[in-house]
Amino acid sequence: MKMLLQKLIINYPYVAAAILFAIGVLTVLTRSNLFKKLLGINIMESAIFVLFIGGSYIRGGAVPILNKNNPGTLYINPLPSALMLTGIVVSVSVTAFALALIVRLYKAYGTTNLQRIEEMRNEVKDKCQQ
Amino acid sequence: MPAVITANLPVFVVIAPLFVGFVLPTFARKMRLVENLVIFIEVLMLAGAVYLTSIILAQEGNPIIYSLGGWPAPWGIELEAGSLSAFFLLIIAGISLPIALFARGNLTEEVGNKERVARFYVLYLLLVGALAGIAVTNDLFNVFVLVEVATLSCCGLVSARNQPWAAKAAFTYLILATLGSTLVMGGIGFIYIITGHLNMGFASQELGRIWQDNPNVIWMAFSFLLVGFGVKSALFPLHVWLPDAHSTAPSPASAILSGLAIKGYMICLFKILYKIFGFTLMQEFSVHRILLLAGMVAIIAGSILALSQDELKRRLAFSTVSQVGYIFLGLGIMNVKGLSGTLFYLASHAVCKSILFLAAGAMIAASGKHNISELAGIGRKMPITMAAFTIGSLGLVGVPLFSGFVGKWYLILGSLEAKDILPIIVIIMGSVLCAAYLFPVIRIAYFEPAPAEAWQDPGLSQKIALILLAAAVVILGVLPGIFLKLAGMAAAELLVFN
Image (cartoon, rainbow over all chains, first blue to last red; front, side, top):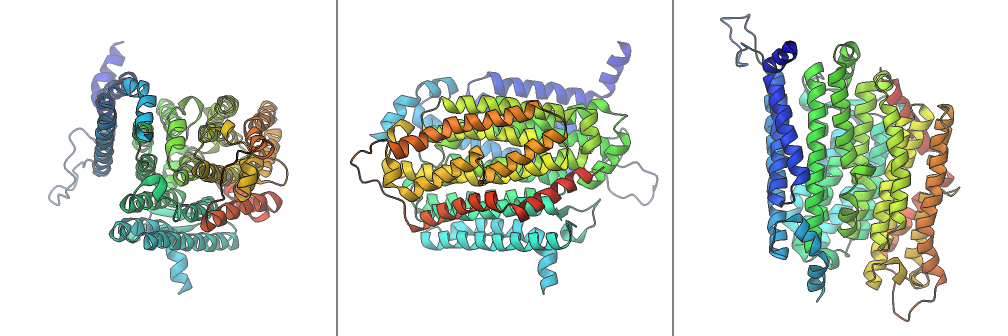
């Protein structure tokens, strides 16, 4: 038990990632508010960012800029940070697109609740065809 | 000169559609120009894919390696055009060209004004470019980025129709697909953390050395990737987004979404499972059993769901859910026959489902009726459309001399070789169920009295598109030779790793 706790504390970035991921998935799957679903997606993505960056971190490592005076320095791997920058860009574009869709849905249905929208499907369809 | 073309072909097929896609909005007011440009670039891609295939065939499957920016593999990003890539590129180019032809001059009705049509084509080309990228990429993070480009363009295509329900379908799709791609990114993260490589070849080598030390991380990677790509390619219990998304999209978009987009994610799964984890690890963690089981459940459940739909496009969408099952089933049969069968089936389903969606779109546009029971007698009024629909159905069911038969035949041979009887029973049952949900459409269309309305076949370019695709189904069924050889080479390439 103590061993497990120690492992968890040492690997705190992974624990944080797991907790964030669980919160995100739960929010996406259980909430019917469109905004909350979108927030859940964003939390999930943050969890993965934490996973990548936590995986690249070395305790006591230096910023990866070559230091000629001290050749034995441990450097932190910069690649995951660069990858996550791409990941953040992707996540922002997904968020923007989803927000645009929410605006369109709100204009058509007057609500941001997915269940209410599903109930109203047939009424609004009829309105469109008229 | 030919050497320059050959060396740069893998990157050209990706860059060309992306570049034209981004240039397209500047010509938005001239719709003819936009459409002709799209068709031109599709023809160019098809030529590139055919040329690439001929090179690969001449080299006996030896891949062309392309290092982006001139940086060699462990540091730079690598593209690899082998037989699997050539095979998938051929499918992409061969199907997106007829779909673009079908969309020509036909979109304003479904999508709206000129600007919206131009935007539709932008998304179309981005999707094609991303899929071509998926075909040639050999880098894990590139897989994620290309998958995400494909997903966003797919969602855009779903919401292209100016209808509130289309926005709802696109939103559900976007949320679930992003959930999927986040899982995929997580899976890639686990592989990267334990191997330190994003290049598939290097990651595979490293994984072969260290997998015994980190079985739990590999379990996590497997489950994240399976569920992630499962959501994206609509594997049965994770298919909930598909029926709405594929049935509300404009018909050319439904065709490319059902025919090509979900296949792109499957090709990713093929590559990651076989090129990175490889045969040994998959067997060690019995992933092939999971795939086999998931595939069988999807075939039966998807067919039963399809049977209960009366709306034509929804029935076709549920049929996709069941057909995805065959491909996952084949992924789990780990021998050359089974894998080449599943690749061939992937191609066959791509062609057949595109025909079915395009013909359904033409029928709905001409008659204004969405339900199967209202389409009585349409076969006599729209002979070419309905003939194409019939050929597509025969191909999908797997009647001999049509494309689906060859794929199913090899799947059955593969499971016989693996000494599994259950998949064979499920494959045959799936064919029967497939006939049960597609043939009633044909019966109603041909043998019921038609109402006195002037329904007509669509215009010339639409007819050409349908005829081209129908010819492809028959050719794949009667003379599968070279295509089957390519699929076999791709399967051998996948199995030879590790």
